[in-house]
Image (cartoon, rainbow, N blue to C red; front, top):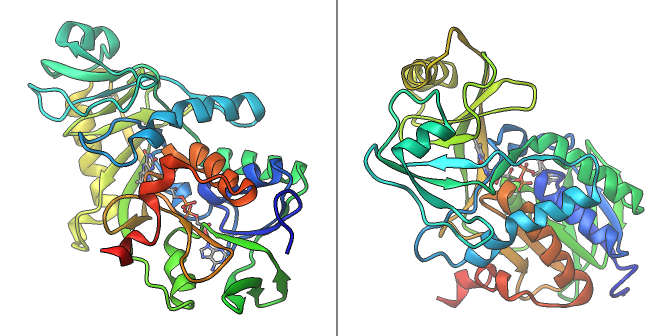
Length: 357
Ligand SMILES: Cc1cc2nc3c(=O)[nH]c(=O)nc-3n(C[C@H](O)[C@H](O)[C@H](O)COP(=O)(O)OP(=O)(O)OC[C@H]3O[C@@H](n4cnc5c(N)ncnc54)[C@H](O)[C@@H]3O)c2cc1C
């Protein structure tokens, strides 16, 4: 079996996580093959609000990962001309009178800002709260373009990429991965990285390993409206919005239930009204589309990253929030897979925590 550089690694899934893994692994000299059932970034990555959000709850096992997320993206931007983050900053508040989450690190450097400062930052807010949390270092990206840029860079480092190629199973010999099976071929491999989003459990179930990962729905809406309604990214109890580079307005909403008046199109109309109520300057706001995305959500909310126990060569990456953490997880996981260098920041994410309890 090859080790280190030249190791044959198959990455299953070309969402933002698989794309980042493929790039980081190929850059380290691995012999990478990416197998994607559909197209690049065709899964939940294409429905992501894509906020690089480093704010964390007070006790957060993955605070070091969130804390390193911004710097990891800045490094990727320097390495890949096709990957661009709009570092607009983010303004969050949970009620009209209090501020929101704790910043994760010095790099997120979120400040508590008062109403006067909020109005300076976002002059179109009709109902600015008393205070809010302002993270000037945060931003958002086009996740589909980012995944394409990562895959193209992986290919430039020699990776082979096959779309429309679903992985049907893993070949295990004497408790060690030996190959990956698709409908068309068997691909010999030293390691496999399962970065298949909500498709992960189908593959791990076939190894008789049950990972508690739910498919958690959320809604992304794209509106045609006036440009520059918001300058940064606003997350409030009423709306979560930001502009795209081409001037559209994106909104992220919770998926409520299957009722007719909670379908994406209906939510898009309700959210448009809420945005009009919150912002000055909205002359018209037309939903272009509203789509449901299924997030791979581990039962305890902590990403599942690492080698599976009892079977050699199988590494899993189920990451939420996946866009925020893609750059840093790609870097650290590739070091674990190629250099055998265990990352302390990934220690709380190990799959075997579900069997140790
Ligand atoms: C409305 C909404 C807003 C969001 N906002 C944010 C945000 O602001 N910030 C943030 O960090 N995250 C956000 N997320 C979450 C984020 O989008 C996901 O965490 C992230 O995209 C997951 O990426 P992934 O690569 O793991 O999964 P995916 O993008 O789903 O990629 C998995 C890929 O694997 C492929 N696949 C599956 N099974 C197989 C198989 N057997 N063989 C081959 N290929 C297979 C699929 O086709 C798919 O392309 C949001 C999600 C939604 C829905």
